[in-house]
Length: 144
Image (tube, rainbow, N blue to C red; front, side, top):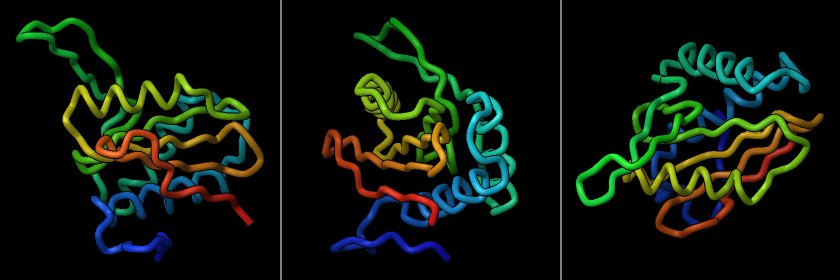
């Protein structure tokens, strides 16, 4: 099983789910490599997470409310186990807008944990955020 290193790993929110996501992302990257469209990685990640007994909803609609009115919406790439939003990217590197998108999705849903997965390079890259700590990469991984 993949272990997340850190000072207090037992206190990480949704640890089992985030470990499953990271493991699934490595497997997808190992099998497919890089160069496909985002949608291909979404579906492959969903297949791999389902194989690992997780729930994985793709293109999950998120509504943004303001004073009781719906004022916008997002489609989260993957919602895993109903508690972790995963955004998938295929660009060579992250953009601050990608981070902002994920943080806004967390804010709109009230969920606490989100992950940004980048399949756009030879080594996969994963960062996780908690909505309570703004931008806080707690995991960066590269295939060895």
